[in-house]
Image (tube, rainbow, N blue to C red; front, side, top):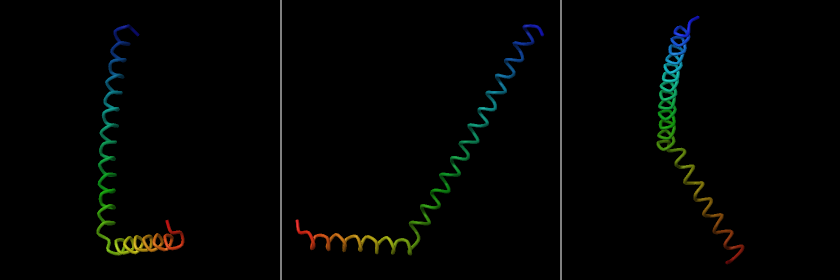
Length: 76
């Protein structure tokens, strides 16, 4: 092969590599957007779930009761 052909092959391979990198990056961006959308949907469903909200409220009330009982046992 002549130097000119080798040079052309290297240029073509470089361009192919660049295209593959761009396609891969675009694919990652699409996947990232999908993951973000899925996380947002999960977050929204958690916020809008009355059972979870009630459970969280009960948990907070129990924590407050425990703190009160601890204060009664060990006064500061």
